[in-house]
Image (tube, rainbow, N blue to C red; front, side):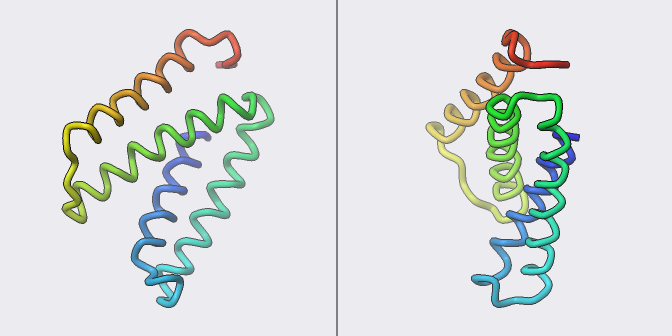
Length: 105
């Protein structure tokens, strides 16, 4: 469910970047629906996963995925510091998920 929440947030953020300050109807509606659905899914996750852990995974994967979308679809360039930073985010999420006793699986 957390992965669905992350995907919905990425869809919402992608549409937000195309909404021209929420002045274009279709991307604005997609943004609102994406965020509402994402938070609904996240609220279900928070029944069993601690808030800090869920949010760390949510934000980490969300950052990486929206960066990949921007790179692949919109041609945004990633320099070496950006790639290193993204690798560190991924490593942090993996450490939390694989080694933290706070995470319930």
